[in-house]
Every structure is written in structure tokens, then in C-alpha cells.
Length: 637
Picture 1 (cartoon, helix red, strand yellow):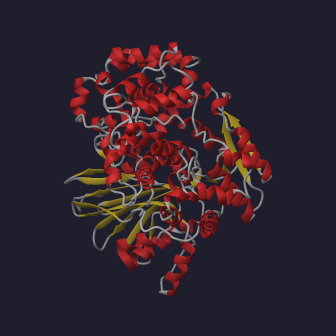
Picture 2: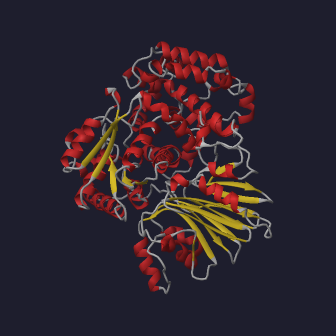
Picture 3: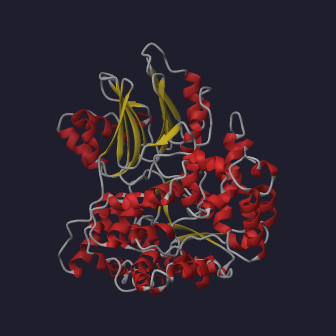
């Protein structure tokens, strides 16, 4: 696991400035504290920060070249099937100088060019310079575990990096906000690919590769998840196959030359990973969990059940409101506005875990493959709303939006969200459940100038477009696919990558094994969501392994009690930041609406905590990256 960066000047006589390349790598040092390396030749410059996981020797250092040094690569990630690929390449006559997975990619590219991607099983982002063809080849893994940003200046230069803050090292870079990206952020709490928070920067989407020859840039998709045709075997046979595939996915992710452990949330997915790690028997198993003082949000008791069953060396941390002292540091690491408040416990979990291990397995991806979120059941049940006369629906939606504030995880809050987002189209109905600031609320919040700069599009259309790209014939399958294309890579995987790499910790996700995901996509929908039960086939598989309390309890999610915090210990911080002249004077937000939301939430009249958290993060991002001539972590407020 590493940080990568590079620059290609389009003038072949213009060498890359070594100070710029070194500065870019320095800004990624947290992703790779074990070493740095550079390659400069003519117009190309490649930089690498190393977190040594497999083959700790200098032979595995990067940038890495093939035998005649016509190919150079910088790579971030893990290729879990590299050993079998290596054996095949040796049989074909290739020579290896290291035992690393990075070198496997070089030789695969020699054999198949871009076709090398179809053989890679793992998480990755890499850049490969083909000096013979003067060709730069960038690629990102199928699901989007590892990030890759690029900055293209036609006619001048092209730069790439694991995080966009690396571009700050170049004096030519101007950190300017992208209004359209911020518009989408207010909708979703994250910035969807290919946008980034910076006007000049874009993300390479998951399952895509980029080719740059001369000044011609092309981007291509190389993989997509398919939900047809369906498997027709019995439920028992399919559960057995699922068990074999999940065990293989876990086993492959235990290959490491450094200590490893597991995140343990108290849910089914992380519990399954721990159970199968214990089954493999790699030695004493270390597990790590985060909790909260507020009972509605705390899952530690369930995590302990798993830890006790498998006799792990278990570690816990309780997150309290004073923990938000790290928020400026988090804003720096997340690079762009990121409003998922569960980034706070994730950040602390990674920090605690890194004290004991260098690699941690987690349960990310199980919900999106096996229908674990309660909203999937709500979507299926919401079809009953279609029988309510259309003339009555607006009144119900209005009433829902004015229900009194209750517990954020309580019945009234969930009912309000369910009713307020009703739409005749079930796809738009689902999309509206995902939003924070909806298309009706944004004009009340955003100034006309900001709306004009952003273009004013309904961000929900991005979710509807993701539905259109799915081959699923069942609404639940298509909805799972939508989350795999949007929420999973742009929110959950960003959250985990940044939280872990900020602490030089590698996270591995067996449920995101693409072969396991393809198998799950081929299962009939009723084996995922059956009646009121999500993850039907997965839970039947895990019944002999996990405590019954985990299998039968409602999903809690990795929520954060910011609703309580904003009414208590953090209310003054909220007012000081959001109601400051600095924030309200930016010209993006209407001051009366910001003040109304703040005071209504503090007084307990409405639950605006998710919206306020987004605005708080956005303002801190402006202060960190836009207001500073050359942002640094110490400049963060």
C-alpha cells in the first residue's frame, strides 16, 4: 500500500522539476512512511511513497522497471493472485528480480498491454510509462478501493496522484473550488466521480483506465458487474458455493509479511471475516472496535460477543464529543469536502489499529452484494405508496417534513424520511432517500450566484443514470448495482481508504473480491432479500459460526451521535463556524437559512444534524485548501 504521483510534460525537451516531484511525494508521505523513490527521464517523472507489506526488501522498491527499463511503474494496492500470475509468467520466460506483486503487472503488460487488467484480482491504482510508445497508462481497480486523481493541462502537462493535495506542490496549481462538484456534495455528502472538489482536478472512475499518448487522452471502462444470467441451483448448493468463495477471499487477503488484524463492528459482515480468519488459524487474532457513550449508536457489546467466541486479542475505544478536535486534521486528509460523519470513528479506529498491526481486514461491501441495508426492504415496501391517490401524496410528504424532531434513529425520523421522498418513479424514490439537501431545499440554502455557477442540475439524475446502466431485471438487483456504482466507491471506500492511509494502515475487504461480487450478483434476489430478512443466504451460511444475537438483530450502521453533540457540547462550535462572517461571506450560502437550520436543531425543533455536518465540513475545507496560498496540515483551522 503506497502513495503514487507523477508528471508528464508534453514538450519532450522539458524535464520534470525534481523539486515539484519531491514535493508531491512528500504530501503523500503518510500513505508510505517506509521509503520514497523517483524516476525522471526526459519529460516523465514518477514518484512513490512506500508502505512495505509484501517483500520488504529493497528489490521491491518503486518506481520499478522491467529488464530493459523501457517500462516503469508506480503502484498502490495489492494483487492477491500475484503468485499464480507470477508462476505463469515464469513459465512464459519472464525474469523476476523481486517477490512483489508490482513486478507482476509489468510483465503482464508486456504480454497483453491494457488487457493485463482482466487478470488482476485485488485493489489497485497504478501508472505505467511505456517509453517506447511514449505512452502513459493509468488504471484503477474494479470497485474503487484505491484512489487516483489527475490534473490535465492540454498542451502543457499531465499530472496524477493518489490524493489531490499532492498537486499543491506545483506552483502552477491553483486550488479553486468546483461549483458543480460542491453542488453534488450538498446532495450526497460526497463528491461523485469524475468530479473532485478542485476545478482543475478529476478522479479516474473505478473500473476504468486512462491512456495518454501525445496530448490525446482517452478513458475506457474495462469491467462492469452483471446481474444476469441468474444461477439456478438450489439454495443449499449456492450457500455452499458462497462459503467456499468467501473463505478463498479471506485466505487470499491473509498474505502479508507484516502483522495483520481485523476491524470488528458488531455486524454480520465483519463478524464473518473474523470467524473465517480464525478458521484459517494464522496465529493470535487481533480485533479492534469503536463505540459511543450513546446507546443508540453503540455496538461494542455485539463486537465483544464475536471476540469472545473466537478468543481474539480485542481492543476497544469509545469516541466522545471532544474527539472532534481532530476534525481539522481529518479535513486535511480527506482532501475534498466529505460529509459522512462516520469518518470520525473510522479515523480513530484506524489510529488505534495501527498501533498493533499494519494490515486490517474489514467487512466493507457485504451490504451492497447481499442487500443488507434496511432501505432495500423499504424500497420494496414503498410500492404500496403507489396505491395512495396522487392528490393525497403531497399532503403526506408535507406532513412528514414537519414531524417534530425525535431521536435521529427513532421511528418518527425514519417515517419522515420515508414519506418526504416519495416519488411515482421507484428509482427516483430510492435516490431521494440518499440525499441530504434535496432539489427543493437547495434554492433556499444556496445563493443565486452559486446556483448559476453549479448549473442547477438535479443531482438525483446521477443515481437515475446509474440505474440505466444496470442489466438487472429486478428492482432490488438494480438498486444494489446503483450502490456499487455510487455510494460504495464514492463514500464508503473513500472513507476507509483515507482513514486507514492517514495512519499508514492497509485495509483489506474480502467482500469486495470481484469474483465474489460477481457470484453474489448472479444469485436470485430472494436469496438476498427474503421477506423482512436481508442477507438471507449469507446469514444461513453464517448461522453455525456467529452468535445468534448478531444474525437476528436489526442493522445499526456505523452512525455517529452528532444530533446529540450539536445540541450539547458542540453547539458553540457549530455557531462559531457556520454563523461566522467568514463562512456566510463566501457567497455560496444564504445566511438566513443557515441560521434557521442551526437554531432549529439546537432548540430541538428539527433534526438538521446531517445537513449541518455537511456545511461544517465544507467551511473547514474552504479554510484549509482554498483560503491558504499553499495549504499545509498546520494551516488547517
